[in-house]
Image (cartoon, rainbow, N blue to C red; front, side, top):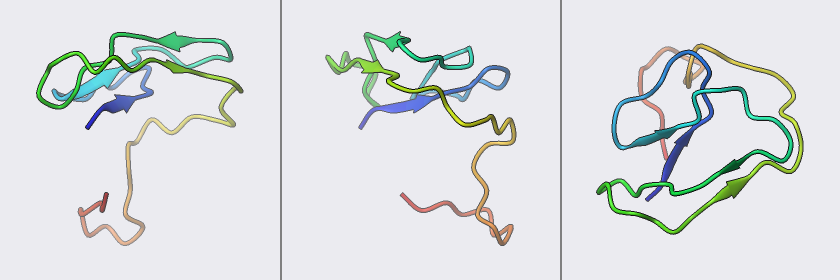
Length: 69
């Protein structure tokens, strides 16, 4: 698994790969690590700007604290 957090202010703990900036069109995120911290060989390119930001992380909608995969 490869986890990529498109964050600007709130980096996630390992095993997440953090962007550490607002992604913009044409940005490339390379050398992403797998959840076991080995190189995945995966790169991600942003093809369109995002519609907005959410600095609050994932929400379940019912405050249960559980987010499914």
